[in-house]
Image (cartoon, rainbow, N blue to C red; front, top):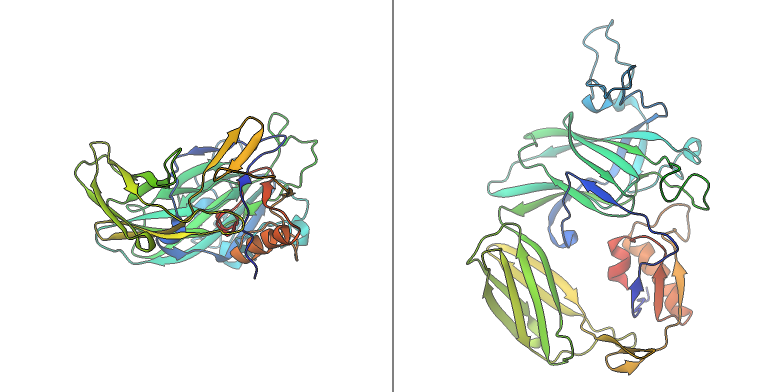
Length: 367
């Protein structure tokens, strides 16, 4: 499959879909971590009146669907059963998987069983690539997170909440539109619902690399700069950065904030649409190893000119929605993301507008 090799991706548009996170945390470069996928078949229950969430007084029901209760006897009033309910595929929207849900806006409950074996010295996080639009997350009957925003990833630590052996994960997902929100009720917008991107159980060391960046130093083509931040504010931790092709191997130590900065003399081959050069970059911290592929380029302006690596460039591009090309539904796979960008490249594009929300990580990396 042809590579897209696009110059820049911009998240622009006439409106923005604002995301808010509650009790959640974002893991960086999650696909380079140690993880167990929770994708696949999830049982689901459609709940248009939120009977599984509220009681008759419209208070949160302490015995709601998230408890995954079973009747103790024939007189018990448990009127739902995840284990005998149908399944939806995750990742995926519900609109295109069940004809009855094509126009549905409301709440749907998802449930997934999985097994867990404790690992000494490891922390566990459940990661969601995206859930549209609002969701409550429950693990073994207890709420562990809420999230609002259908296009941003979130994760929550569950190290002390997992049980050895069988566990069950339940989500209440709601995609209702409201007059005070964007997109509002009367709007040219197809409102997908569901768990639309990957779900993973991610295993990390007790102290891990939380965030990092590496780029050309501003105004220079012969020096790289960057930083690494740890998950805790801990001083004196040694980190190493390797770029084998450039023969770079630099060690630094964190400050009292758990942050370390790099400054490296190197002259990398510059990234461009005609020569989309990427370098293998390796970060090490203790027993943790993270690999990434990074291209180095400078984007600047000179009056009304846009310059790439000091040369003027004319942007020729199109707007791409996160819509699957050969089926209905949201794009969530690496293959579909690469296909969309390949078509743009074949049309002569050197940039695309990712309209108009954060697209999945596969799309950005495929570019």
